[in-house]
Length: 252
Image (cartoon, rainbow, N blue to C red; front, side):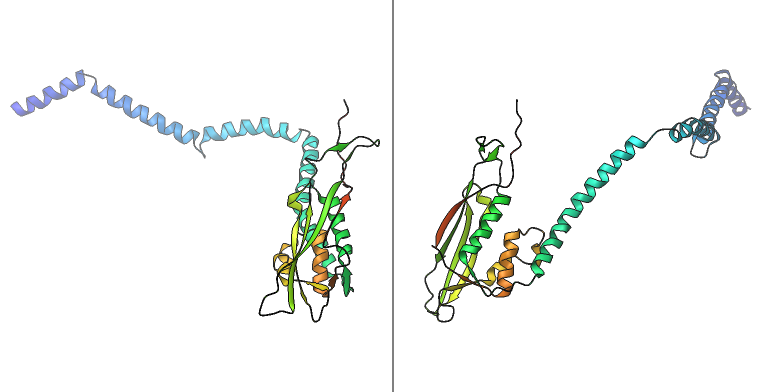
């Protein structure tokens, strides 16, 4: 009986402290949270209602908006992207086409090669640091200096009939533009004529067509045709070259 009385006393005390109301409130709060979670979830009824109202406002507005301005901008962006991605491929195709044109030239004077170098310098010299001439009406850059020199190496002991050398092409105003062309000559066969060494083709091949200049393609064609170079001028020569590019001048 004492145990039963104690149980009754505990229950009465808890009831008086409002435990029932507290538990109901906790469960009610939990039920409301779960219900709201379901209603506001991805597939909840409230979510569907809100989504329906948003669609009813946004879709007519978006459908009636004038996108012509953005279409023009998009068209411009697409053109620029196509130009940038196609330019490298165009250069490859142009170089490949030029490289495949047969060169029926058994011999060429070194002075002719130098003329091609001068054309290359005129078109490709870096102009950022060049001075501008204002004397003759339209502003131009002052002429730059294109140079060519030939250096012969000592003949190796094991082959006294073979002579090696290097033709160096430079531009005083643009050091990055110049490069060296390895050449050789069999003195008992070629006399005073030179051949382009195969080392040139090792660094200038089909895989690098994207980067090759017109002058380098010209030299590759000489090599492929087996054209011999005749030294018809001094081993060292230079000349003034008119720059093709014109400066952009802002008149104040």
